[in-house]
Length: 354
Ligand code: TRP
Ligand code: SF4
Image 1: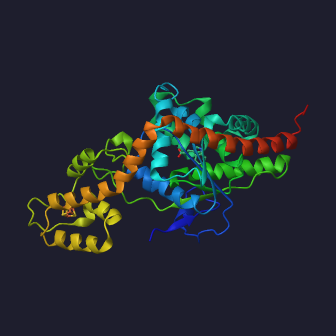
Image 2: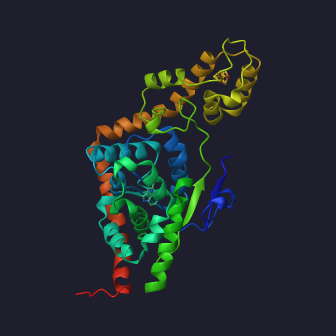
Image 3: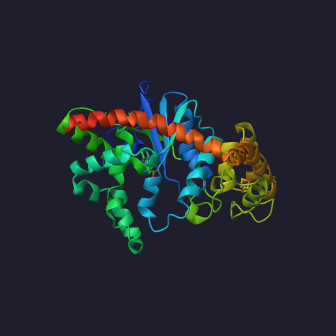
């Protein structure tokens, strides 16, 4: 069973992420977003979408494509922004996000995020942003890419606006986002202290990191070129699985294997029924099954999992207009709520109302 943990009040070292909390029974509103940076891969599916799918059945949920956030680091190349947004729509719907159950929208369709971002910008000390670990790290790693922009420094302020504008109390995210969530809580607290209590302090909701390596055994990541995409064809899947790294100690089929070091086996553990996994494990250890055979079985099972997603994806892309309409409608619903919050915010801050 996949264990889920809820983390609240996370400290700077993220130590607390190791503590497991009971799953909350009192979730009121869930919200999360994803930057449209390209097609989704299995790492994204198990790292985020799977949790979203579960939550949309449990609570009022908002999921949005964070297109403004996407350009904080790639403002110099926005050529694919629109296409990536559409691809993300197809990936989400194909994976099972359901507009009947959750509100699916595009960040830039809801201009109120930008207004709140501006207002929050007035109250957030620059120091809070400069000590954000993501910021520090990016400044180190991307020295040559000129991310020392105002927009990038303000990334977590925009993220805070995304969240509090819907008064979301639970935000499903990966562990890397914990500092951003903590900052959101601090920003909400500061706003409430200054102008009166409007915003709840959102709690992160973590799903256990997926034990799903990339084809080469490293973390699955677009920049490593080791991904399996939700959109990959059957042929591509077969080819990719054939290229996966296995136990390097196995040269001949009769060599005893070590499934614990093998990527193929990591996949079997996720996709293959547990009885069968045990069987594979034993025959690998005894040198009875060859890697070629083992991979064939994985291909079959992966394709069983991915082909309905792939087909749905194609269907959505064939009716692009209808698909986009889902997000236009979702954005209208989201916007209505965002507008209500902004009314409250402007009133609390004493803006003149004509
Ligand atoms: N920063 C998030 C990421 O990179 C994306 C994001 C933007 C987000 N706004 C959000 C996530 C609000 C949760 C809530 O994954
Ligand atoms: Fe990996 Fe399967 Fe080969 Fe064992 S038989 S090393 S589990 S691919």
